[in-house]
Length: 501
Image 1 (tube, one colour):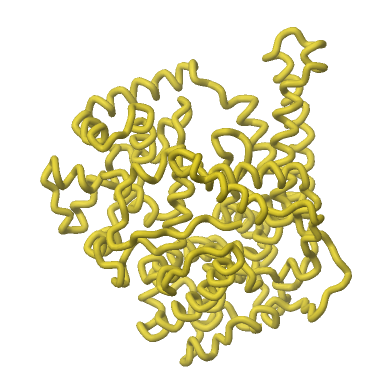
Image 2 (cartoon, rainbow, N blue to C red):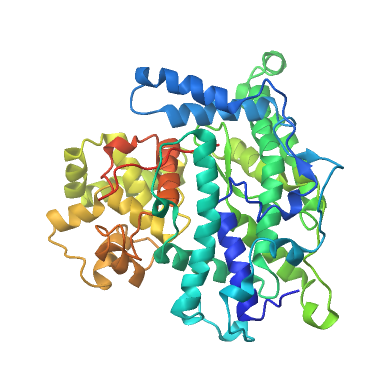
């Protein structure tokens, strides 16, 4: 077992964690430790590739490049209708199984060749920046192995789905991205400093892969029963019917949550605005579970007891869903408060912001955004402050995506063209981070480095790595329903990969 209290241990942990975050649709298997005894055994009549082919044949008839959205919704239909067939199921025929996490990941990463000069570290003395803990050669080695694994998978997916040939460097994680990931990783280590974050990231990954189809089916069943003719026959008041039904479901799932939330990590994330599917946040799920482990002090003295907390586990994946089910049920039960006094105050606050930002609004209109889209943009730049009054939202999981949003929606252009802002100092980015004075986002040095290299696709701080940028643009299209053709194009990059399943 490689100690987490060493440079090699932290680097190995970070590498596997980052790949789990950045590359969840994979064939390399590095974060499938808990899926060794599970596989998908789908029937022959379920073929997503055939659906993709049909979509391609119909694409000339579509408007606004909505193929990705249609494919996503079609796949959600399949996953909801065939949750068992399209989820990994237990199998007894497992070749080359290993119960030790470190034996497993050593198949993929030889950390001794990446971090040559190993040494012990005191977590409470290290910094949140990767550059403060590893030298340039070590960081380049870390980047190299991450990109090697992710690129090999992208090439596999490209061949499988018959994408056009793209240059290798379009798949790569750059230095700016790895800095953001390390900061997020470090925040999780603060919550639980004595365990491998990647071990639990792989556990969350496996639970999500096995359980997400059942969550989507639950969402559709709840929506269906809420509109049931049979139930409506016995309850003349629709609101009363919904209240009784949802209260029953909430009570049942609360009991199950109390029963299972310590043993099985609860998946966490958010729901799409059309209420048809969910998106799991690895970061939020990890933080929630580490908080439980930390409060219990169960792993407090593993270095003294020599207990290895990184062994293979088999958990009931459906027990990881109660938190998300309750989030959805409570949203249906209590979330519609548009006419409440609280939301009236939020509506007034939005009107004040629109008056204050009237020049920016006119600038967005000149870029062909309509009023509804402008409210969505203002909400995003205000950290989703106005979501409760029905305005679509997007979650910024890290600062690089907030930076990208500002670029794609012309925020930088507005401040340069209309207000004469040069963005030549770190402090000058306060106009962006504090777009709404109530924003909690802070000014960061990384924004300045990203901005300088916006036009340099070969620069180490170029903010538009192909895979993560494409995923972000797809989220804009899917969650905000704003077509990417309206957005500011990426400089010196004409093509971005389509999403693959």
